[in-house]
Amino acid sequence: MNEEVITKLAKNYCNLEQTLIEELNIDRQSNVSSAEEIWQPVFRRIVPTKFNVEKNVYIIDSHQNVSQKVSLAIYDEQYTPYIFNYGTIKYIPIEAVAAVVLCENEKDKKRETEGQGAEETWLQSIQKLKTEMNAYVRIQSGVLDTNLESLYKKFEEEKRTYEKQKCSEKNCTVRKPQKQSQTSTRPITILCTAIDNNFEDSEFDLVLKNDESKLKKMIPNENRSLDKWSDCLNHYCHDRYENKDKLKALADTSEENKSNRTLESLNVGDQNVLLSLMFQLNQLLMLINNPIFFPHESYVKAFKEVISDAGTKKSK
Figure 1 (cartoon, rainbow, N blue to C red):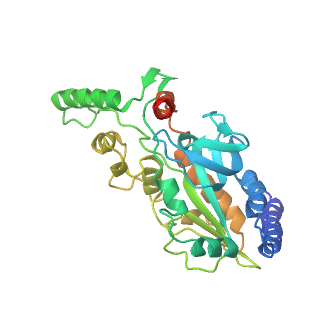
Figure 2 (cartoon, rainbow, N blue to C red; figure 1 turned 90 degrees about the vertical axis):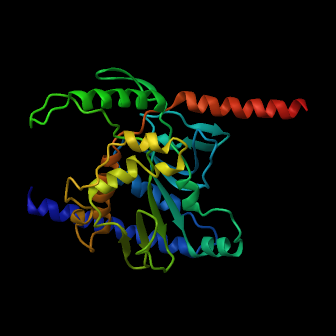
Figure 3 (cartoon, rainbow, N blue to C red; figure 1 turned 180 degrees about the vertical axis):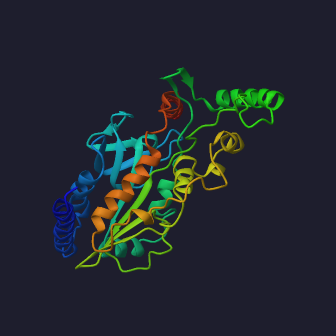
């Protein structure tokens, strides 16, 4: 590429950042924050067009869990088209969500502190949501049933066959039991804040702080291998599940890093935060790639259980 073009592109992102800072500074003076309105077009510009960026929504799962209100949700509407509506309120299944954003300011934090006693934090309300392996879908090789019990049974059969037939030769043709690239996905968590704090140990994957004159970006695990990022996004916290051992057996994870690639290597520089954010966030989105197959039957079961319970209570 021509150096002049590269320079102009980089400068454009710096100009965009400056405009963003000015808008956020004005918003800080308001009694009611509308930071999500300011950040929404920024994320829309950064992420691929296959993703929708929706503001003020709730995330749900097939286990009847509901998150606290999410400032911005980045989700794949083409791949998982189920958005449940209650009037103008939107509830998005966790399987579709690639990233969630919390927009936080001093006034919000003050109200939160004054009203302490809540059972869970915003981040915990996201972390408790569980995707489900229970889809029936056509793929390139045929129809696939991702029901956990079916997959595990097939895996055990392939494992027994492999143990009997495997050979010590380098080019052994006996196929290893097939593992799954996704067993329990979770969204990338992003905090957009105007609050002074030490975010080096933050549980958020990515923190963007408005420092009045400059946007600061912090990624606590920026040096982590992309392999480890892939594991934590696609095989998240199996211990939350009843069938945790089966999920762990099916998960295509590795104790060793296959790559020395990190998010840190995708930093353009401190002087161009939004350009670095674009490369780093999209790298994480590529690790998720497509949502886990949608478990229709699991959501139908959840609706049936709730409707049945409501009918039972009404008849009493």
